[in-house]
Image 1 (spheres, rainbow over the protein chains, first blue to last red):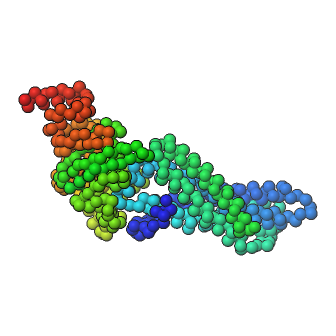
Image 2 (cartoon, helix red, strand yellow; image 1 turned 90 degrees about the vertical axis):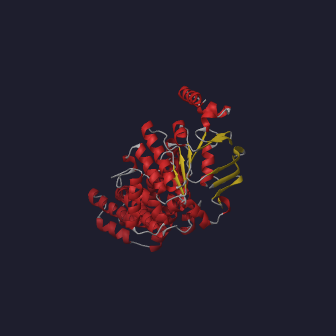
Image 3 (cartoon, rainbow over the protein chains, first blue to last red; image 1 turned 60 degrees about the vertical axis):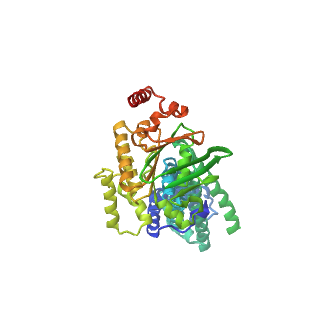
Length: 234
Length: 255
Protein backbone atom coordinates (compact mmCIF):
# COMPACT_ATOMS: atom_id res chain seq x y z
CA UNK A 1 0.00 0.00 0.00
CA UNK A 2 2.67 2.52 1.03
CA UNK A 3 4.65 1.96 -2.19
CA UNK A 4 1.61 3.08 -4.20
CA UNK A 5 0.94 5.97 -1.81
CA UNK A 6 4.42 7.45 -2.14
CA UNK A 7 4.55 7.45 -5.94
CA UNK A 8 4.92 10.77 -7.75
CA UNK A 9 1.53 12.56 -8.01
CA UNK A 10 0.06 12.38 -11.52
CA UNK A 11 -0.69 16.09 -11.74
CA UNK A 12 0.95 18.63 -9.44
CA UNK A 13 -1.73 21.33 -9.78
CA UNK A 14 -4.43 18.88 -8.71
CA UNK A 15 -2.20 17.55 -5.93
CA UNK A 16 -1.59 21.07 -4.57
CA UNK A 17 -5.34 21.71 -4.53
CA UNK A 18 -5.93 18.44 -2.66
CA UNK A 19 -3.16 19.20 -0.16
CA UNK A 20 -4.73 22.54 0.80
CA UNK A 21 -8.14 20.91 1.07
CA UNK A 22 -6.72 18.25 3.42
CA UNK A 23 -4.92 20.88 5.52
CA UNK A 24 -8.31 22.51 5.94
CA UNK A 25 -10.21 19.27 6.62
CA UNK A 26 -7.69 17.53 8.86
CA UNK A 27 -5.90 20.50 10.40
CA UNK A 28 -7.82 23.77 10.50
CA UNK A 29 -11.12 22.06 11.28
CA UNK A 30 -9.49 20.33 14.28
CA UNK A 31 -8.18 23.58 15.75
CA UNK A 32 -11.32 24.41 17.74
CA UNK A 33 -11.50 21.13 19.63
CA UNK A 34 -7.73 21.11 20.26
CA UNK A 35 -7.81 24.67 21.63
CA UNK A 36 -10.81 23.95 23.85
CA UNK A 37 -9.44 20.70 25.31
CA UNK A 38 -5.90 22.06 25.75
CA UNK A 39 -7.02 25.12 27.67
CA UNK A 40 -9.25 23.26 30.10
CA UNK A 41 -7.04 20.20 30.60
CA UNK A 42 -4.09 22.57 31.21
CA UNK A 43 -6.18 24.20 33.92
CA UNK A 44 -7.09 20.84 35.46
CA UNK A 45 -3.45 19.68 35.45
CA UNK A 46 -2.42 22.86 37.29
CA UNK A 47 -5.25 22.54 39.85
CA UNK A 48 -4.55 18.83 40.46
CA UNK A 49 -0.84 19.53 40.90
CA UNK A 50 -1.56 22.40 43.29
CA UNK A 51 -3.92 20.25 45.37
CA UNK A 52 -1.36 17.46 45.60
CA UNK A 53 1.63 19.61 46.60
CA UNK A 54 0.26 21.54 49.53
CA UNK A 55 3.25 20.81 51.78
CA UNK A 56 4.98 23.99 53.01
CA UNK A 57 8.33 22.34 52.16
CA UNK A 58 7.53 22.19 48.44
CA UNK A 59 7.89 25.53 46.67
CA UNK A 60 4.76 26.70 44.82
CA UNK A 61 6.66 27.41 41.62
CA UNK A 62 6.89 23.63 41.14
CA UNK A 63 3.18 23.71 40.14
CA UNK A 64 4.07 25.74 37.05
CA UNK A 65 7.13 23.60 36.45
CA UNK A 66 5.20 20.30 36.67
CA UNK A 67 2.33 21.64 34.56
CA UNK A 68 4.74 22.76 31.84
CA UNK A 69 6.63 19.44 31.82
CA UNK A 70 3.46 17.37 31.82
CA UNK A 71 1.90 19.36 29.01
CA UNK A 72 4.98 19.56 26.78
CA UNK A 73 6.17 15.99 27.24
CA UNK A 74 2.94 14.01 27.30
CA UNK A 75 -0.33 15.86 27.32
CA UNK A 76 0.08 17.86 24.11
CA UNK A 77 1.80 15.32 21.82
CA UNK A 78 0.25 12.07 23.07
CA UNK A 79 -3.13 12.98 24.54
CA UNK A 80 -3.93 15.35 21.68
CA UNK A 81 -2.85 12.74 19.14
CA UNK A 82 -5.33 10.29 20.65
CA UNK A 83 -8.04 12.95 20.42
CA UNK A 84 -7.05 13.49 16.77
CA UNK A 85 -7.04 9.73 16.16
CA UNK A 86 -10.70 9.75 17.19
CA UNK A 87 -11.73 12.84 15.28
CA UNK A 88 -9.58 12.68 12.15
CA UNK A 89 -9.15 8.90 12.08
CA UNK A 90 -12.87 8.21 12.00
CA UNK A 91 -13.32 10.92 9.37
CA UNK A 92 -10.64 9.40 7.12
CA UNK A 93 -11.94 5.83 7.45
CA UNK A 94 -15.58 6.72 6.97
CA UNK A 95 -15.01 9.05 4.02
CA UNK A 96 -12.71 6.59 2.23
CA UNK A 97 -14.88 3.62 3.18
CA UNK A 98 -17.93 5.35 1.75
CA UNK A 99 -15.98 6.09 -1.42
CA UNK A 100 -15.10 2.40 -1.62
CA UNK A 101 -18.62 1.02 -1.13
CA UNK A 102 -20.17 3.57 -3.52
CA UNK A 103 -17.60 2.64 -6.21
CA UNK A 104 -16.00 6.10 -6.23
CA UNK A 105 -12.56 4.49 -5.74
CA UNK A 106 -13.29 2.12 -8.64
CA UNK A 107 -14.23 5.17 -10.71
CA UNK A 108 -10.80 6.69 -9.98
CA UNK A 109 -9.06 3.43 -10.92
CA UNK A 110 -11.02 3.12 -14.17
CA UNK A 111 -9.96 6.66 -15.09
CA UNK A 112 -6.34 5.55 -14.70
CA UNK A 113 -5.70 7.34 -11.42
CA UNK A 114 -3.54 5.83 -8.71
CA UNK A 115 -6.28 6.06 -6.09
CA UNK A 116 -4.02 5.36 -3.09
CA UNK A 117 -1.65 8.13 -4.12
CA UNK A 118 -4.51 10.51 -4.95
CA UNK A 119 -6.44 9.93 -1.73
CA UNK A 120 -3.84 9.13 0.91
CA UNK A 121 -0.65 11.08 0.13
CA UNK A 122 -2.24 14.55 0.55
CA UNK A 123 -3.68 13.43 3.91
CA UNK A 124 -0.29 12.21 5.17
CA UNK A 125 1.54 15.34 4.05
CA UNK A 126 -1.16 17.65 5.42
CA UNK A 127 -0.95 15.94 8.81
CA UNK A 128 2.87 15.88 8.86
CA UNK A 129 2.92 19.59 8.09
CA UNK A 130 0.04 20.83 10.23
CA UNK A 131 -0.02 18.62 13.36
CA UNK A 132 3.24 20.00 14.77
CA UNK A 133 1.62 23.45 14.54
CA UNK A 134 -1.50 22.14 16.31
CA UNK A 135 0.59 20.53 19.05
CA UNK A 136 2.63 23.72 19.62
CA UNK A 137 -0.65 25.58 19.93
CA UNK A 138 -1.90 22.93 22.34
CA UNK A 139 1.25 23.32 24.51
CA UNK A 140 0.82 27.08 24.63
CA UNK A 141 -2.89 26.96 25.46
CA UNK A 142 -2.41 24.20 28.04
CA UNK A 143 0.06 26.37 29.95
CA UNK A 144 -2.19 29.42 29.57
CA UNK A 145 -5.08 27.33 30.90
CA UNK A 146 -2.96 26.40 33.92
CA UNK A 147 -2.12 30.05 34.52
CA UNK A 148 -5.79 31.11 34.44
CA UNK A 149 -6.75 28.23 36.72
CA UNK A 150 -4.38 29.69 39.30
CA UNK A 151 -5.84 33.14 38.88
CA UNK A 152 -9.40 31.90 39.27
CA UNK A 153 -8.88 29.46 42.17
CA UNK A 154 -6.23 31.26 44.24
CA UNK A 155 -4.47 27.90 44.71
CA UNK A 156 -1.14 29.46 43.67
CA UNK A 157 0.25 32.85 42.72
CA UNK A 158 0.61 33.69 39.07
CA UNK A 159 4.20 34.94 39.69
CA UNK A 160 5.13 31.50 41.09
CA UNK A 161 3.50 29.80 38.11
CA UNK A 162 5.35 32.00 35.60
CA UNK A 163 8.63 31.42 37.41
CA UNK A 164 7.91 27.67 37.38
CA UNK A 165 7.28 27.48 33.68
CA UNK A 166 10.54 29.33 32.96
CA UNK A 167 12.56 27.17 35.34
CA UNK A 168 15.01 24.67 33.80
CA UNK A 169 13.59 25.06 30.31
CA UNK A 170 15.17 22.58 27.91
CA UNK A 171 14.41 23.09 24.17
CA UNK A 172 15.15 19.39 23.58
CA UNK A 173 11.81 18.56 25.19
CA UNK A 174 10.04 20.52 22.46
CA UNK A 175 12.07 18.66 19.85
CA UNK A 176 11.17 15.37 21.54
CA UNK A 177 7.46 16.27 21.59
CA UNK A 178 7.48 17.33 17.94
CA UNK A 179 9.33 14.16 16.89
CA UNK A 180 6.59 12.14 18.55
CA UNK A 181 3.95 14.31 16.90
CA UNK A 182 5.34 13.69 13.41
CA UNK A 183 5.36 9.91 14.00
CA UNK A 184 1.84 10.02 15.42
CA UNK A 185 0.63 12.17 12.50
CA UNK A 186 1.80 9.44 10.13
CA UNK A 187 -0.03 6.80 12.20
CA UNK A 188 -3.22 8.91 12.48
CA UNK A 189 -3.50 9.14 8.70
CA UNK A 190 -2.20 5.78 7.46
CA UNK A 191 -4.01 3.31 9.75
CA UNK A 192 -7.49 4.84 9.19
CA UNK A 193 -6.75 5.21 5.45
CA UNK A 194 -5.87 1.51 5.29
CA UNK A 195 -9.10 0.52 7.08
CA UNK A 196 -11.19 2.81 4.86
CA UNK A 197 -9.56 1.92 1.56
CA UNK A 198 -9.92 -1.84 1.95
CA UNK A 199 -13.41 -1.93 3.49
CA UNK A 200 -15.85 -4.41 1.91
CA UNK A 201 -19.61 -4.40 2.21
CA UNK A 202 -21.98 -1.57 3.05
CA UNK A 203 -22.57 1.20 5.56
CA UNK A 204 -22.45 -1.15 8.55
CA UNK A 205 -18.97 -2.33 7.55
CA UNK A 206 -17.85 1.29 7.08
CA UNK A 207 -18.98 2.02 10.65
CA UNK A 208 -17.17 -1.06 11.96
CA UNK A 209 -14.02 -0.17 10.03
CA UNK A 210 -14.16 3.32 11.50
CA UNK A 211 -14.31 2.00 15.07
CA UNK A 212 -11.55 -0.51 14.37
CA UNK A 213 -9.35 2.19 12.85
CA UNK A 214 -9.70 4.48 15.88
CA UNK A 215 -8.97 1.62 18.31
CA UNK A 216 -5.90 0.44 16.39
CA UNK A 217 -4.58 3.96 15.88
CA UNK A 218 -4.87 4.65 19.62
CA UNK A 219 -3.15 1.36 20.51
CA UNK A 220 -0.30 2.03 18.07
CA UNK A 221 0.11 5.59 19.39
CA UNK A 222 0.32 4.35 22.99
CA UNK A 223 2.86 1.65 22.11
CA UNK A 224 4.96 3.96 19.96
CA UNK A 225 4.85 6.56 22.71
CA UNK A 226 6.44 4.06 25.06
CA UNK A 227 9.20 3.07 22.63
CA UNK A 228 9.88 6.63 21.48
CA UNK A 229 10.14 7.83 25.07
CA UNK A 230 12.61 5.03 25.81
CA UNK A 231 14.63 5.89 22.71
CA UNK A 232 14.62 9.67 22.98
CA UNK A 233 14.67 10.25 26.73
CA UNK A 234 15.81 6.94 28.21
CA UNK B 1 -12.81 -3.66 -31.92
CA UNK B 2 -12.46 -5.41 -28.57
CA UNK B 3 -11.41 -9.05 -28.89
CA UNK B 4 -11.68 -11.32 -25.86
CA UNK B 5 -9.90 -14.66 -26.13
CA UNK B 6 -10.30 -17.57 -23.76
CA UNK B 7 -10.71 -15.50 -20.60
CA UNK B 8 -10.32 -17.28 -17.27
CA UNK B 9 -10.70 -15.71 -13.86
CA UNK B 10 -10.87 -17.36 -10.47
CA UNK B 11 -11.16 -16.23 -6.86
CA UNK B 12 -9.54 -18.33 -4.13
CA UNK B 13 -9.44 -21.35 -6.43
CA UNK B 14 -13.11 -21.01 -7.49
CA UNK B 15 -13.38 -20.35 -11.23
CA UNK B 16 -15.79 -17.53 -12.11
CA UNK B 17 -15.02 -17.05 -15.81
CA UNK B 18 -14.24 -20.30 -17.62
CA UNK B 19 -12.95 -19.39 -21.03
CA UNK B 20 -14.97 -16.55 -22.53
CA UNK B 21 -14.21 -15.62 -26.15
CA UNK B 22 -16.12 -12.90 -27.96
CA UNK B 23 -15.79 -9.65 -29.92
CA UNK B 24 -17.33 -6.20 -29.54
CA UNK B 25 -17.65 -3.99 -32.61
CA UNK B 26 -17.44 -0.24 -33.10
CA UNK B 27 -20.71 1.69 -33.08
CA UNK B 28 -22.66 -1.12 -31.45
CA UNK B 29 -24.46 -1.40 -28.15
CA UNK B 30 -23.50 -4.71 -26.56
CA UNK B 31 -25.44 -6.15 -23.65
CA UNK B 32 -24.14 -8.72 -21.18
CA UNK B 33 -26.95 -10.58 -19.46
CA UNK B 34 -27.18 -13.53 -17.13
CA UNK B 35 -28.33 -14.59 -13.68
CA UNK B 36 -26.73 -13.23 -10.52
CA UNK B 37 -23.45 -15.05 -9.99
CA UNK B 38 -23.03 -15.88 -13.68
CA UNK B 39 -19.85 -13.75 -13.87
CA UNK B 40 -21.19 -10.58 -15.54
CA UNK B 41 -19.62 -8.12 -13.12
CA UNK B 42 -16.33 -10.01 -13.02
CA UNK B 43 -16.28 -10.04 -16.83
CA UNK B 44 -16.93 -6.29 -16.95
CA UNK B 45 -14.23 -5.65 -14.33
CA UNK B 46 -11.78 -7.77 -16.36
CA UNK B 47 -12.59 -5.65 -19.43
CA UNK B 48 -11.99 -2.52 -17.36
CA UNK B 49 -8.70 -3.88 -16.05
CA UNK B 50 -9.90 -3.84 -12.44
CA UNK B 51 -9.40 -7.63 -12.31
CA UNK B 52 -6.40 -9.33 -13.91
CA UNK B 53 -7.44 -12.62 -15.56
CA UNK B 54 -5.49 -15.82 -14.82
CA UNK B 55 -5.60 -16.82 -18.49
CA UNK B 56 -6.66 -15.30 -21.79
CA UNK B 57 -6.30 -11.90 -23.42
CA UNK B 58 -8.39 -8.79 -24.02
CA UNK B 59 -7.32 -6.69 -26.98
CA UNK B 60 -8.55 -3.12 -27.46
CA UNK B 61 -7.94 -2.28 -31.14
CA UNK B 62 -4.77 -4.35 -30.97
CA UNK B 63 -3.70 -3.15 -27.53
CA UNK B 64 -3.57 -6.07 -25.10
CA UNK B 65 -4.31 -4.98 -21.55
CA UNK B 66 -1.70 -7.11 -19.80
CA UNK B 67 1.10 -6.40 -22.28
CA UNK B 68 1.06 -2.60 -22.08
CA UNK B 69 3.62 -0.34 -20.40
CA UNK B 70 2.56 2.27 -17.84
CA UNK B 71 2.09 5.08 -20.41
CA UNK B 72 0.15 2.98 -22.91
CA UNK B 73 -1.93 1.55 -20.08
CA UNK B 74 -2.78 5.06 -18.89
CA UNK B 75 -3.71 6.02 -22.45
CA UNK B 76 -5.96 2.98 -22.73
CA UNK B 77 -7.66 3.95 -19.46
CA UNK B 78 -8.33 7.41 -20.85
CA UNK B 79 -10.00 5.81 -23.84
CA UNK B 80 -12.49 4.16 -21.49
CA UNK B 81 -15.58 5.72 -19.96
CA UNK B 82 -17.50 3.99 -17.22
CA UNK B 83 -21.01 4.51 -15.87
CA UNK B 84 -21.28 2.75 -12.53
CA UNK B 85 -24.48 1.24 -11.16
CA UNK B 86 -24.85 3.91 -8.49
CA UNK B 87 -23.31 6.65 -10.61
CA UNK B 88 -20.15 6.76 -8.43
CA UNK B 89 -20.09 10.53 -8.60
CA UNK B 90 -17.64 12.14 -6.18
CA UNK B 91 -20.04 13.42 -3.55
CA UNK B 92 -17.68 16.08 -2.19
CA UNK B 93 -17.48 17.74 -5.62
CA UNK B 94 -20.09 19.72 -7.52
CA UNK B 95 -21.49 18.40 -10.79
CA UNK B 96 -19.18 20.72 -12.73
CA UNK B 97 -16.14 19.58 -10.72
CA UNK B 98 -17.13 15.94 -11.20
CA UNK B 99 -17.13 16.30 -14.97
CA UNK B 100 -14.06 18.55 -14.95
CA UNK B 101 -12.15 15.95 -12.95
CA UNK B 102 -10.80 13.75 -15.80
CA UNK B 103 -10.05 16.85 -17.89
CA UNK B 104 -8.04 18.39 -15.06
CA UNK B 105 -6.16 15.15 -14.44
CA UNK B 106 -5.29 14.26 -18.01
CA UNK B 107 -5.35 17.34 -20.22
CA UNK B 108 -3.54 20.64 -20.33
CA UNK B 109 -6.55 22.61 -21.57
CA UNK B 110 -7.25 26.09 -20.21
CA UNK B 111 -9.97 26.54 -17.61
CA UNK B 112 -12.35 28.12 -20.14
CA UNK B 113 -11.81 25.31 -22.67
CA UNK B 114 -12.49 22.74 -19.98
CA UNK B 115 -15.66 24.54 -18.85
CA UNK B 116 -16.86 24.72 -22.45
CA UNK B 117 -16.39 20.98 -22.78
CA UNK B 118 -18.29 20.40 -19.51
CA UNK B 119 -21.22 22.45 -20.80
CA UNK B 120 -21.19 20.60 -24.13
CA UNK B 121 -21.48 17.19 -22.47
CA UNK B 122 -24.07 18.42 -19.97
CA UNK B 123 -26.14 19.70 -22.88
CA UNK B 124 -25.64 16.39 -24.63
CA UNK B 125 -27.24 14.54 -21.72
CA UNK B 126 -30.00 17.19 -21.54
CA UNK B 127 -29.03 18.73 -18.23
CA UNK B 128 -29.13 22.44 -17.52
CA UNK B 129 -28.40 24.65 -14.51
CA UNK B 130 -26.89 21.85 -12.45
CA UNK B 131 -23.22 22.92 -12.59
CA UNK B 132 -22.98 24.18 -9.04
CA UNK B 133 -25.18 21.51 -7.47
CA UNK B 134 -23.87 18.52 -5.53
CA UNK B 135 -24.77 14.93 -6.56
CA UNK B 136 -26.99 14.47 -3.50
CA UNK B 137 -29.18 17.36 -4.72
CA UNK B 138 -30.06 15.54 -7.97
CA UNK B 139 -32.55 12.75 -8.65
CA UNK B 140 -31.34 9.23 -9.51
CA UNK B 141 -31.98 9.75 -13.22
CA UNK B 142 -30.12 13.06 -13.26
CA UNK B 143 -27.19 11.48 -11.41
CA UNK B 144 -27.04 8.76 -14.07
CA UNK B 145 -26.99 11.43 -16.78
CA UNK B 146 -24.16 13.24 -14.99
CA UNK B 147 -22.31 9.91 -14.78
CA UNK B 148 -22.76 9.48 -18.55
CA UNK B 149 -21.55 13.06 -19.11
CA UNK B 150 -18.44 12.36 -17.01
CA UNK B 151 -17.86 9.10 -18.87
CA UNK B 152 -17.94 10.78 -22.31
CA UNK B 153 -16.15 14.03 -21.45
CA UNK B 154 -12.78 12.65 -22.59
CA UNK B 155 -14.22 11.36 -25.89
CA UNK B 156 -13.74 7.69 -25.01
CA UNK B 157 -13.53 4.90 -27.57
CA UNK B 158 -15.10 2.39 -25.20
CA UNK B 159 -18.07 3.03 -22.94
CA UNK B 160 -18.89 0.58 -20.15
CA UNK B 161 -22.13 0.71 -18.17
CA UNK B 162 -22.99 -1.38 -15.14
CA UNK B 163 -26.77 -1.61 -14.72
CA UNK B 164 -27.26 1.95 -16.00
CA UNK B 165 -30.98 2.06 -15.31
CA UNK B 166 -31.28 0.11 -12.09
CA UNK B 167 -33.47 1.88 -9.57
CA UNK B 168 -35.01 4.18 -12.17
CA UNK B 169 -38.65 4.45 -13.16
CA UNK B 170 -39.49 2.94 -16.61
CA UNK B 171 -39.72 6.31 -18.36
CA UNK B 172 -36.36 7.57 -17.02
CA UNK B 173 -34.83 4.16 -17.77
CA UNK B 174 -35.95 4.47 -21.40
CA UNK B 175 -34.49 7.99 -21.60
CA UNK B 176 -31.14 6.69 -20.29
CA UNK B 177 -31.22 3.73 -22.73
CA UNK B 178 -31.93 5.98 -25.68
CA UNK B 179 -29.23 8.40 -24.59
CA UNK B 180 -26.64 5.62 -24.43
CA UNK B 181 -27.64 4.34 -27.86
CA UNK B 182 -27.55 7.81 -29.41
CA UNK B 183 -24.10 8.47 -27.94
CA UNK B 184 -22.86 5.11 -29.24
CA UNK B 185 -24.09 5.93 -32.76
CA UNK B 186 -22.99 9.55 -32.72
CA UNK B 187 -19.44 8.99 -31.41
CA UNK B 188 -19.06 5.56 -33.06
CA UNK B 189 -17.81 3.99 -29.84
CA UNK B 190 -18.03 0.47 -28.47
CA UNK B 191 -20.58 0.34 -25.69
CA UNK B 192 -20.80 -2.61 -23.32
CA UNK B 193 -23.69 -2.73 -20.88
CA UNK B 194 -24.13 -5.10 -18.02
CA UNK B 195 -27.88 -5.34 -17.46
CA UNK B 196 -30.70 -7.22 -15.80
CA UNK B 197 -33.33 -5.08 -17.45
CA UNK B 198 -34.93 -7.05 -20.27
CA UNK B 199 -36.65 -3.93 -21.61
CA UNK B 200 -33.22 -2.39 -22.25
CA UNK B 201 -31.91 -5.61 -23.71
CA UNK B 202 -34.76 -5.81 -26.23
CA UNK B 203 -34.71 -2.09 -26.91
CA UNK B 204 -31.04 -1.28 -27.52
CA UNK B 205 -29.12 -4.58 -27.47
CA UNK B 206 -27.51 -4.81 -30.90
CA UNK B 207 -25.42 -7.69 -29.61
CA UNK B 208 -26.44 -9.72 -26.58
CA UNK B 209 -24.14 -12.06 -24.69
CA UNK B 210 -25.77 -14.48 -22.27
CA UNK B 211 -23.43 -15.69 -19.54
CA UNK B 212 -24.11 -18.86 -17.62
CA UNK B 213 -21.74 -20.41 -15.09
CA UNK B 214 -18.84 -18.35 -16.34
CA UNK B 215 -19.16 -19.07 -20.07
CA UNK B 216 -20.94 -17.24 -22.87
CA UNK B 217 -23.77 -19.70 -23.37
CA UNK B 218 -25.42 -17.70 -26.18
CA UNK B 219 -24.76 -14.69 -28.41
CA UNK B 220 -27.06 -12.90 -30.80
CA UNK B 221 -29.05 -9.76 -31.60
CA UNK B 222 -32.25 -8.48 -30.02
CA UNK B 223 -34.12 -9.94 -32.99
CA UNK B 224 -32.51 -13.35 -32.60
CA UNK B 225 -33.26 -13.54 -28.89
CA UNK B 226 -36.98 -13.78 -29.76
CA UNK B 227 -36.38 -16.77 -32.01
CA UNK B 228 -33.77 -18.66 -30.04
CA UNK B 229 -34.52 -22.17 -28.86
CA UNK B 230 -31.65 -22.11 -26.37
CA UNK B 231 -33.33 -23.37 -23.20
CA UNK B 232 -31.17 -21.42 -20.75
CA UNK B 233 -31.81 -18.15 -22.60
CA UNK B 234 -35.54 -18.78 -22.90
CA UNK B 235 -35.76 -19.71 -19.22
CA UNK B 236 -33.87 -16.56 -18.18
CA UNK B 237 -35.24 -13.94 -20.57
CA UNK B 238 -38.83 -15.13 -20.70
CA UNK B 239 -39.28 -15.90 -17.02
CA UNK B 240 -42.07 -13.33 -16.67
CA UNK B 241 -45.54 -13.95 -18.13
CA UNK B 242 -45.45 -10.60 -19.91
CA UNK B 243 -42.28 -11.44 -21.81
CA UNK B 244 -43.60 -14.95 -22.59
CA UNK B 245 -46.65 -13.34 -24.21
CA UNK B 246 -44.52 -10.79 -26.05
CA UNK B 247 -42.41 -13.63 -27.45
CA UNK B 248 -45.42 -15.70 -28.44
CA UNK B 249 -46.95 -12.68 -30.18
CA UNK B 250 -43.67 -11.97 -32.00
CA UNK B 251 -43.26 -15.59 -33.12
CA UNK B 252 -46.85 -15.90 -34.32
CA UNK B 253 -46.51 -12.62 -36.23
CA UNK B 254 -43.32 -13.71 -37.99
CA UNK B 255 -44.55 -17.19 -38.91
